[in-house]
Every structure is written in C-alpha cells, then in structure tokens.
Amino acid sequence: MIHAYLPQTLTPENLAIYIKKNSIEQRSHIEEIDLTPEEIAEFEHRSSAANRALDKLEAELKLIQEIFKKGTPEPQDIKIYPTKGIEALKANRKFADDQIEKGFREEVTMLYAIPVPEKKRIVYVTIEGEEFEQYSTDMTKDQLIAYTTLFSEDEQAATGTTVKRVTAAPSSDAGLDFLDEQN
Image 1 (cartoon, rainbow, N blue to C red):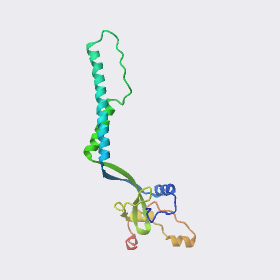
Image 2 (cartoon, rainbow, N blue to C red):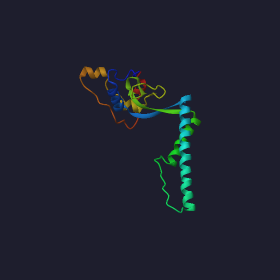
Image 3 (tube, one colour):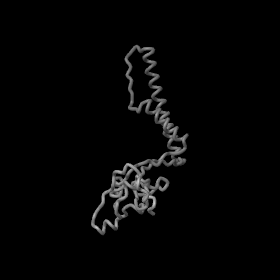
Image 4 (cartoon, one colour):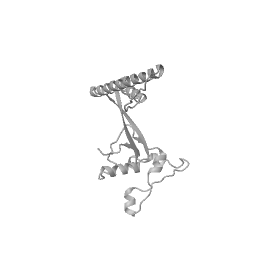
C-alpha cells in the first residue's frame, strides 16, 4: 500500500520517479528467507551437476597430461568441448554448497528516505511506496531546517507563492528553540 504522504494518483512509473527525485538517502534492507525444500533440492542438483562436469574435465586434463608426460609415437587429436572451465565450475559448486549450508537466501530491497515535514519524520519507502516503519525516524534539527518551508501550504496557496526547499542550514543552533516547540 502506498504511504499516505506520497502522491496517491500517480502511476507506478511516475511514483517511482517521484520517490527517486525526492529521496534524500538510500539504504538496503536485507531479509533472510529460509530455503524451501524445492530450493534446497535445486541447489543440490546444481552442485551435483557441477561436480560431474568437474570430474569429466579433470579426467580429460589427466589424459592430456599423461600424453605429455609419456609422449606418443603418433599424432593425437584432442578435442575439447565447450565448457565453463574448472574455476567456474568449482565456484558454482561452492556457491550451491554454501547456500545449502547457510539455509536461507537474502532478498535485498532498496529503500528511499522521503522527508515528511508535516509530521517531522523521515519515512523510508520502497520504490512502490510501501513504508518500512523500522527505518523511519524523527527529523533532526538540521533536517527540519533543510526540508521545511517558512510558510505552510495554506499560506502559500493564499498568497499564490511557492517556496523552494532550503538546502543550506545555518552554522549554529542559536535561536532554533521554536523547532522543539512545534507539535
């Protein structure tokens, strides 16, 4: 569900553009999901297939090395079929074995920090607009200064003016006590 402080009428594509444009920070959320029996069986199959391919390659390598060591009285045609290679096969087998041992897969979700000055919050949402509450925080004084306008939206509408976001904060907190009093 789209967070209440995001535009509700945008298409998913335009909402994604809006979120990226208005994001002040990005972070990754990593979720550990237990492997299903089917996923475990798939990793076991991958490991086994890589192992069989490795055995074939190593047998061919051993045969070639034997020919070079002992020599040959007549020419030998050696045909090497397309392969990923020993290093890639070992890496694939190790990856599959590590996944089985770990027992879970990691799902990474990119989160975007959107300031909500009306609530004095920084809200973290997915590209689809779903909030991840555990990352959302209250704004700091510097963030309140940077992401809050001088006039409310009602005052801007009444005067017909628009106020752009302030991007530079003052050098000290002197005289900013009013930020703590707003609620």
